[in-house]
Amino acid sequence: MIEFTISDMTCSHCEAAITEAVKKLAPTAQIDIDLAAHRVRIEGAGDAEAVAAAIIQAGYTPVPA
Image 1 (cartoon, helix red, strand yellow):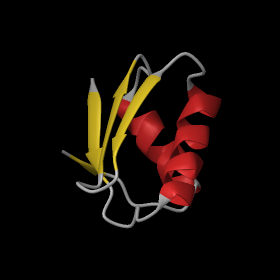
Image 2: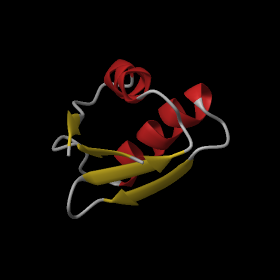
Image 3: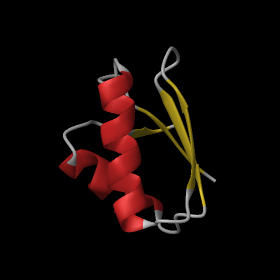
Image 4: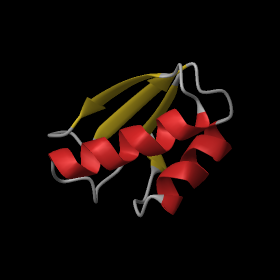
């Protein structure tokens, strides 16, 4: 499992943008987002660096949790 803290994820639009970015990279990934805690957990996406890069490209700042 890959887990990030994303402090600049603040609303449902942010959730959707991050989900879309990860799904483009790994369409079958399971994504669990806790907006209040600013946490994103991803299973089945493979490489954490590639996932982080996709989230960064979407405009957010993932920090490994």
